Each structure stands twice: as C-alpha cells, then as structure tokens.
Length: 330
Image (tube, rainbow, N blue to C red):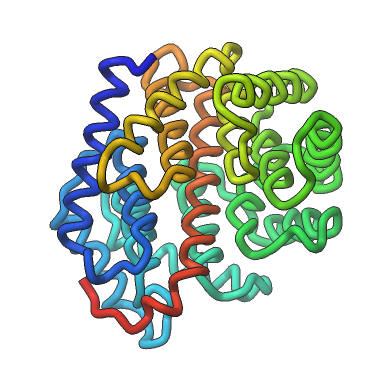
C-alpha cells in the first residue's frame, strides 16, 4: 500500500520532473535523463532548486573542453549528483576531474561511465573511505575475467563499490559468481542483467549470501504471481527488495506506485522506468526509518541505489550523447 509519506515522494518526483522539463525541454533528447535527475533529489531528500541545479550544470559545461562529453546532456546528471551529495558542488567538480584523470591514467576509458565512477570514488573519499584506483581496475579486470562479453565500461561504478569491500579481488569475484550461478539455476536469465544483480547483492556484507539468494527468488516469484515475469532490466529492483527481510511484502507497494506514475501524462510512455523509479522511491522511504541509520542495510541500500542510477545514466547517455552533442547549453 502506498503510504502518505510515499505519496509525498511521488508528488515531489512529479513536481521536480515538471520543473526540469520546463527548463530543459530542448536540451535533453531523452526524457529519462530528467526522470533520473528528479529521482536523485527525491530519493536523497535533497530539496530541488532549479536555478542552483542549472548553475552547477552550466559551471560543468564552462569548465570542460569543447569536445568533452560533459558539454552535452551528461552534465545534467553529473551536475545533479554533485548538487545532491556535496555542499560545494562547483569546488567538488574539480576534485572529480582530478580523480577522473587519475582513472584514465590507470587505463579506464574516457567517457560518462568513468565520470560516474569518479563520482562514486569522490563520495567514498568524502566519507573517509578512500579506495585506491589501481584496486578498482583489478576488480574490473576480475569482473571481465569471469564474464568477458558481459563486462563493459558501464560496470565501472560497480567496480568502485566492490573494490571498497574487504578481502582479495579473487574472494570478491568468487562471492559475485556464487550469486550468478545460484540465481541462474532458479529462473533468472543469464546475461548482463543477472551479472549486475549479482554485483549489487555482493555489496551487502552483513546478510548471508544464501539468504540473499532465497530472498531474491521469493521476490522474483512474488512479482510473477502479482504482475508478470520481471524483465532483466528489473533485476536490480529485485536485489533492492531482497535486502529487506520482508521484501516480498513491498512488491505490491512498488507495483501500485508504478501504476500511479504510469497514470500521469509525463510518465505514461515509460512503464519500465516507472517500475524502477517506484522501487527506488519505496526503498528511500525505508531509509528514512531512523532505526536503519548507521546500519549495514542502510549503507547497502544506499550504495545499490547509487549503482543502479549510475548504470541507468551510463546506458541512457551512451544512447543519446551523439544526438545531444549539438544541442545548446543550459
């Protein structure tokens, strides 16, 4: 059931999206970019101020080279992340660029995915958890060694989060592979989406792996019973709900919230995206529970939402950066 608090979040998401659409209608070729930006503010309980957001986005555009990908629409998602997570986003942007260049020196490819990974590294550093970039590359190579054809630059942000775990790279990869093999035996389709789910489940260091597998299967089956078989792109939200002991009880709430979004004109053509946004907003409501603050589940859910957002941003940016590169700035 959609609670009054979740109702407020859905309304805030709608209102923020409408403000963004009014300001950036002709500057973003894929409206999902605006949906992601709006969700960042609402999920993180950050008040949205349009002029501040545009100021940060303009600052990014004015401080990169003529052919940099941040001249186009990715600057809006990077700008939103900086505005959401840091008090001085313009200052932090220069730190982001430093980390980005260090990653390029470690043979990470240039582009949106590396900026997103640098953003995650910057956030970890801010929390006092600096992660060596060479370790991130080792984790990425470990990911690639297990699933060469499934691993791409869009996995960079996940590599950062996994690199922050304790243990050797081999141990981390074995942990990920355990999820992949067990879930593939239980109805989940092999491929990039299952690899992504396996990675995000690995971020939770407190729950026993077999329990996370059981929870994931239970939630997957609940979706099939209550709605339909989830698509691969929805596997991450299965992983999110699996972190809750009673995650299957939240499936109907997610579906109801998704239907609410689908009934609104701005979102009616984005059903798959609506389900993901509904899950993120539902889980963000759970994070607002004071009892979860400072716990492992809080950190895991927060990290998984970040990873999911980064993956979606990278995917959308890859599809739109060419068409949007000729657009004017904000």
